[in-house]
Length: 109
Image (cartoon, rainbow, N blue to C red):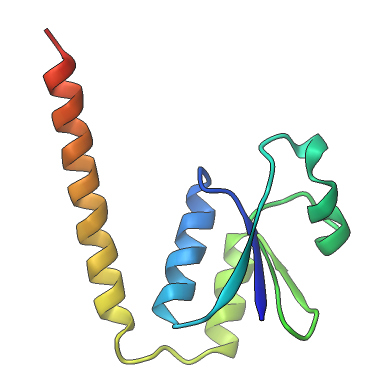
């Protein structure tokens, strides 16, 4: 099983999670501490403190969004419903932004 080292606040981690979902890949998530000094488990697993990082089932690594995306595209075929996932994610992001803006506007006197 693939293992993704990431954080919820990281935009690159979000984009990698979305791509893995589009590809229909099951993976295990490891949450990484915000502070680089506290990332000992990540360093042990990958030799780096950079997120996102993906460990393949064969032990190979991809560190950083660009390397992960490149490797996913090289190793995995995109399923027919990948575009539907992309569209749904974009719609959800727009809805979340609109709701956030409404909350912000409502709080303004």
